[in-house]
Image (cartoon, rainbow, N blue to C red; front, side, top):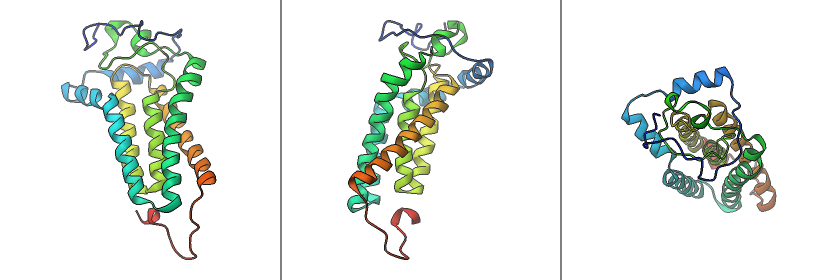
Length: 212
């Protein structure tokens, strides 16, 4: 095999019943993105896929949202931010992944055909929770500030790429994850806005995030 960790990913780590469900186009795009592009991109993949990076980005975005908004709107955005992450991760892991039961490419394809840059257990690949969680955060960040949102979306896209380059997700996994995460962000914002409430705009006055 071509695992950079010295072996094939272990099925024993939280293994679940998964089935190989992928098409020719998905595999072709996967192979193109998974090919060896040098140690720099492999290193970036490891960093982007790490838990520490996810926590750092979540904290940074939460702080930025807190600084950009004020009053009840700030509270609503922060509640939405947390709720979007919880919904994306928990529902994705406990409902969507078991429902689809799709096998990761590092398990579905022959070991010699996959470069495994990051480790992952055989617990289902659809949707990619890395992608969904980052796009959930990006959706709420976009609501707070367009500039912050653009940066968050760029980071989310890079993380989604890293999951395919790392050998643990099909391209459609990360596309589905992006859509699921964006939906969670919109639902969370809509709910938080109704529960917490936001200040009404004064006639003729644009809010700070519109100018950001």
